[in-house]
Image 1: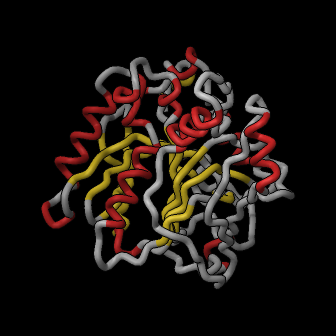
Image 2: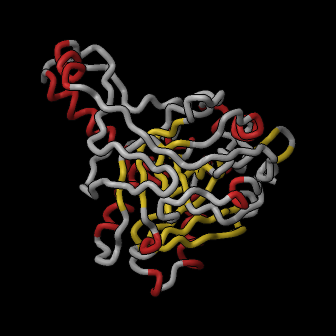
Length: 306
């Protein structure tokens, strides 16, 4: 029942668009003089993906946004303590609510991931690179709890029942099929009524810059969506311990290892973009209800668990 509202019937259309806002030299100078002001992240390679427009962006290695922000703060004045945070994370759920998640229980995630690795990863899938429990954001802006496995050849997304402790479904996406990877803040179109997420994500695409066909855009049951979007799992913000203890729930680490894996493939022509990820949702009533009640996650709900 965790995917009870998977098939919501909200209709949307449009093409996928990525955009960035450049910062002028004047603004950059002003930010240096006034370090207390909020910094605007600078994107070196602004890009737009609309219809068949081509993408031009380098595949230069990137640093974790949190480390980059810290480096920028130190570059202003070593003694100044700039209390800005990039990105502006809105922590999902509270400490008490997160305890209802079955994945918050000790050993549950580790056991499930090890089971998936043993049962689903084969020698022909390449070298095992890492595993995560993340939030997948669907075409319809619904959040789903997913195990993600990464090898040198593919990304595997697994739907797992954390109550019965069994696999329900899985999907393999081969790295050689990817043409674009986008890393950045999750945003909505300017005309959207959906509140901002203030959250970062990574999107894997293999549609070669083409707009989604109408049979996919207007069909809530379609399984042919040519991209995957991941964000950090809610547990990331509530897990006790340091970076290592929370790394299993951290989208940023997946993004880094994914880029290294793609760059190490001689035949890969995948472009890496650091731009906002546009979620084409304009009203999103059903998705807001779905996400607010965390229907895509396995948790205790009163006298019931689903």
